[in-house]
Image (cartoon, rainbow, N blue to C red):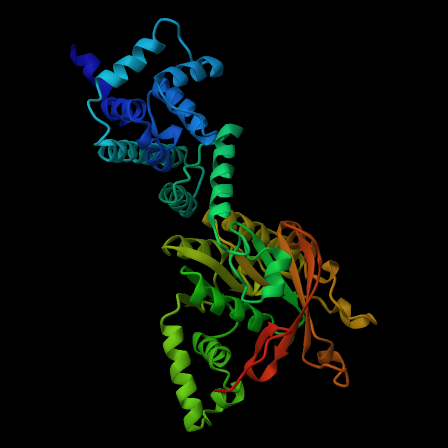
Length: 452
């Protein structure tokens, strides 16, 4: 081989023709290994187009539970337009001849995945180098883009532009299979409130959920309830970004919700011996939970995104609250006349973050005073501060309302309403909840706390 030819080959992206052929040959000589390969590899993990076409054919046949052998694969390649009269049959025979056994298919898969990963990293490195050479973006912008792209590769979601509907359908098919096999009553993460779970199907991946209310209605309490339940039961890490309260205040609230000791006692420290035992048990329970807290009051969406990318097995992000957040430009951009645009940018960034991290993002929001002047003070979508963009970007909008806050003589002052004002996954409506002010917690209406 001439020296010039060697240089040309070195400029190719990393791949292993032998491993690709061995994986395909293994599936053809022993269909029992097909499920294992399908579970680990995607068509884009193959480099040679001919191998991509064969794998796409087998992938499609597997999803339709069709018999997989050399004859049926060849027939389906014809139907898909991948058949070459002179080469296809010979190439399938070659694949089977060069693969002595399917016993080593795991090793072949590992080689393929590693080469695919190297190609993705090389692609990102090339794009970043091109951005640097253009000189139009700041270093911070390029760094953020680099983090974003590398995180996407880590999550197994390399950004490849336009995606064929066939690839999307494969993902949908996999998701439907997961849901069918699951024993869970709802597809999303539980809020800990059964009636609310049923109404919104839980907190679903990539959703932006907005929880809004007037001050004093219990927004933070509701958020901490959800955080506590997810942190204890989901088996995933949950992150709480508090722009208003300190870590210590939040920990006290969580202890109060967990052990049902009056929040006032915890604030003053006037605890009985029985209370101390309850607090110790609650602290032990919280120690074993997977809750992460950040109380940086000057945080931006980009900061939150960067911090969350580094959290393994992330299940939920909670932010308290939207109006306190800074735009990426910092305080200099926070003039009153631009505030609507800034909040619009923040809410859009939050939705993009939810999609990128592929977890539900629960963001708290203040309401304007508009409802105070109405006879019926229940919040409406138009009451959202700088509302247009927030309302548009959120997948679910929840309002908290307690009649007892406005009218102390009401029949049930601790009756709370969670108003589902927007729901992309189902119907809107109202869920009744029980508010327990002494423990700053919400519960289902039929719930009762029993002293032991």
